[in-house]
Amino acid sequence: MSMGIKDDAALRQVLVENVADTVEWLRGIGVNFLAPLPQPPHRVERLHQVMPTSRAYVVRLHKHLRQLGVDIRVATPVRQLILEDGLMAGVEARGAAGPVIVRSRAGVILASGDIGGDTALMHAYLKTWTDGVEVYNPANTGDGHKMALAIGAAIVPRKDLGFEAAAHVRFVRPKPGLLQKLPPWPAFTCTMVWAMKYAPKAVVRPIMMRFLTTVLGPDAGMFKEGAILVNKRGERIGRGNEAPNILIPQQPEGIAYIVFDQKFAQKFSNWPNFISTAPGVAFAYLQDYRSARPDLFNVGPTIAELAHVAGFDADKLAAAIDDANQDRDDKMKLSAGPFYALGPVKTWVLVAPVGLAVNTKFEVLSTEGKVIPGLYAVGHTGMAGFTMTGHGHGLGWAFTSGRLAAGHAVARSRKRIRDPAIESVG
Ligand SMILES: Cc1cc2nc3c(=O)[nH]c(=O)nc-3n(C[C@H](O)[C@H](O)[C@H](O)COP(=O)(O)OP(=O)(O)OC[C@H]3O[C@@H](n4cnc5c(N)ncnc54)[C@H](O)[C@@H]3O)c2cc1C
Image (tube, rainbow, N blue to C red; front, side):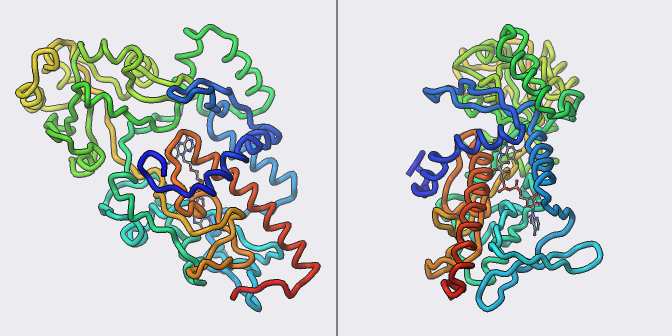
């Protein structure tokens, strides 16, 4: 049990014991990190910021695989597992020119991500689900889950988790700028890491903020401290303890803005009050958003002028602020200009936390709890009741489980070559 969420302790242990080797393996293929960086409230500096952006993973892995002679097929979705004589013999995919058969001696590793793109699976395996909420990876339609289900695999449902837990409020992503297009050449990224480490913080901070291509989540503390949510018309959303992630999808265009006044702005300019966590700088404050994300930053000396800048109806925004001030004491009232609106924010399902049942070798388990020989599942497809709640857990798990599963698959196939009768799908 962690943070009140049921968790698979054995899989968590596998991650903890192997993720550091994964980081070294990634370094070995030319992925550079600015690390370790502080990430309060963790005691130990732990955050690894990939340089220059997460595109480095794709570029460096692609290069590594090509050097190994791996045949990479894009736009060729896998549709079916091939079983021969009870053994996993490969997959059938659909290419532009028709079916593609890929045969395999060492087994099949399913790595098709999560189930967020498949509404039926979301309803079946989460406690609650709300149709129409945007998912970040709609191409992740749980194909690996479905192919494995078809041959008797088990899924670990998350009936302890519902829509509320799976959906997150995030600022909309920035348009990619020049910095996001920088090439991840190792010599270049090593120089960047060196400069970031030794340059004065005042210089580094604004640069790091500009690298934030990821979607950042506003901290819940903003609402506790008095910020309010309004929709694109300026109407107030939510009055009590309703979670914003549930309310926002019901608004026009599914977007909202976080509105506050100057007193609040001053408070959220320093620790312990931050707007969001942010890779590389740990916590981002209002001034970071002003300089690095002007697309999200709206300010006006009066409520009417803020409404004009952000495109709200001025009367509706005034009514929203008035309504919020009704039940507040003077200290908490939104009354001191300038007034601010950060947004748009949206609710997204970044990843849906439902995976196939796997053991600690990432072998997929049947509904009877038996290993399906030669079938492995990694990343979110092999999540198996393991909850990734911390920064870096998702990628740490994807790379670690993939790396280890490949080793297990090769070891198993060598054993089988020595004794072909050892196993078959039961
Ligand atoms: C906005 C956002 C920000 C994030 N930030 C972080 C972060 O800062 N740190 C972190 O650790 N994690 C982060 N994560 C989570 C992280 O991205 C995931 O945990 C990780 O990518 C999961 O890897 P995966 O291989 O399981 O799935 P994915 O990366 O989703 O890859 C699955 C792939 O399989 C493909 N696929 C699906 N079906 C088929 C099929 N039938 N045939 C062939 N291919 C198929 C999909 O198209 C996709 O390319 C973030 C996620 C999001 C959405």
